[in-house]
Length: 144
Image 1 (cartoon, one colour):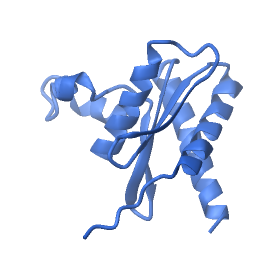
Image 2: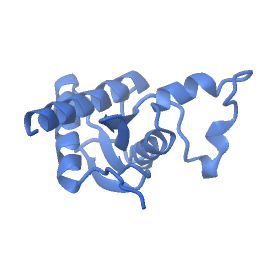
Image 3: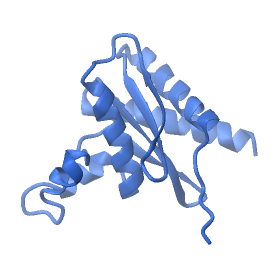
Image 4: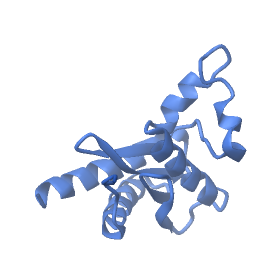
């Protein structure tokens, strides 16, 4: 029998709040998706002004980061021609995203979920996603 660590809905809300705060600071309305450890959507928010096309992109970034247990940006680096992951982004119906903005969430060495952010540049998306993860980890540490 397996024991699986997984983000709760309350955890997802904390992640979204931290991500939204950073998005507001930089003035870019984002689409924010939080997935569990298997990449399934737990919560989603499209800030007022977030791009309509970014709703699916954010979800797929969270899916990729959780399932691959790595950042979407790192997938981008290894998926270039001549690299070991070349073409990976065409797998699974194109759901694997290779641009910044998807970050796995590790707790005690286990991936418990991921956040995916989209609507800005890849660097802005990754910055906001990291802010959400940092906020979540700080809140989790203070409640232990």
